[in-house]
Length: 139
Image (cartoon, rainbow, N blue to C red; front, side, top):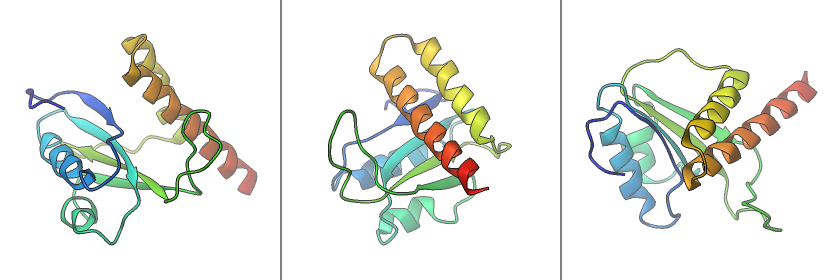
């Protein structure tokens, strides 16, 4: 992630490990640029200093905890930790419904064409669709 002028929406799935804290800090800083939204998929480590310093109860930050454990690609095993989606925004924004978020992910993926970022948006859309189906079953 570079330090451009902002005004973009970025999905980030950083390498997991000790460097996550640096990515969270960078995303928090970059999201302060006007018109910028950063969606970050990271382990749900609520006991860490970076969670409390940059995410928890911060204005313009939204946290979505993912129920269960994620599986990546065709992997047979789930991640050994829970995950969360953290959304950093430069300014307050109306919340999207799950259907709107799914549509947004597909729209962004189409605009990006064939790229790793497009694939990540499609993966996020798949997870959101699964969440929507789960919630519909609960009702």
